[in-house]
Image (cartoon, rainbow, N blue to C red; front, side, top):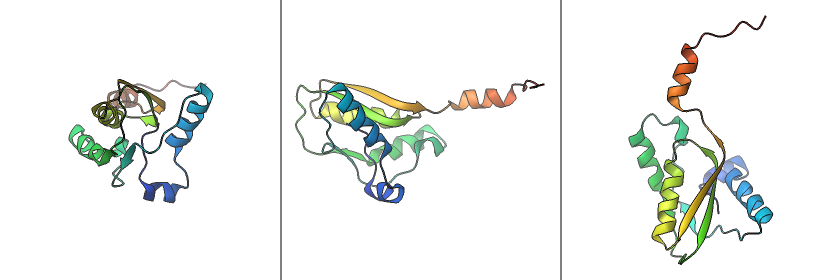
Length: 129
């Protein structure tokens, strides 16, 4: 299953990239795909644009889970971009609270951590000539 995107954001964008990736992975791995478990009740901010851990923690509270029994299931949870792990951690926690035995997270890409961005800005650039 994928980390859910709020319906208004999906309408604006025209697609849900995490869902497309998750559906493709499920098909290739011969696994069922479910989109009836997790939901997002408000659009929320894009994680990588938030300034601190407190903002990121508050932002992921928009994720919820429907009353769907997951007892004994193993879940592959897919997101498009891994930033801090807050989103995947929140969704995995919800899935486990509903009975999932374990949750494996996969992301198609990751952002560069802030510490590395700052170090990269300080590193002298090589002369291409």
